[in-house]
Image (cartoon, rainbow, N blue to C red; front, top):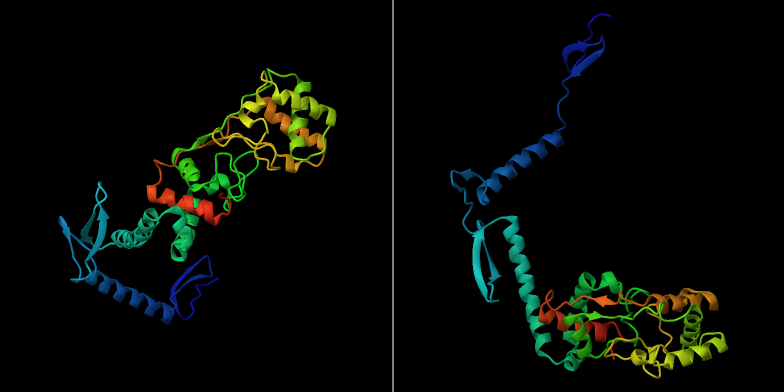
Length: 310
């Protein structure tokens, strides 16, 4: 075949019919390109842009610097100024937002717990900032709504508080953390005795059990050689100073009894706890991670906004 040429081509042909076109660029594309060039020139003039030796072009006066508030190591606020860039702009905006928040944090810190709950404006801030603090620090264990997870973390929205649910107790828990522990009884008790104890514990919550086994379990519970009553109390209602659970309130934290469909499954769940004990009930201390005003705000949020404090 001979060489083929058509309008708007360079005249080059490959493989008999492959031609290189010279169609003009779309007008809208050209104008967009021209505008970006113009924008670049204006930007170079207004803002710091080009390096010159050890310095750089400063930009138009009034645009080339940005002022922001910074805190020293001892907590004092100082005014600083730096050349304009997106990082310094973000720093300034962040510090401005923190300064606005600090006023409210300071007000919460200076107000008694009971009075914070009575102040509508303060509680609006507590609910807003507390939700963020809770999501960032507490939700991974206690879930986003504070409902907790059976066998893993306590529910913060009910009235069952193993270490106490007053403002002071919650503040103490957040600051210093908590460590719960229950020894394993697998080497101390026989399988039959563990079954009896499990039936007794379930009977305290009104569950259907083997009455004969539950009666024998009641004797074991009160037996000084076994020692269940030492931590859980003679009435099995627990001890908040020790963090021992109330076994009579139908609230299950470490044994997933509610998930079981029959009595045998519930007995097995309780037996797991009695047999193996508990060493996972650990909450880390937040005193060194959060500021005092943040811990106080979280205390109010957990007590008053999640609805479980008492």
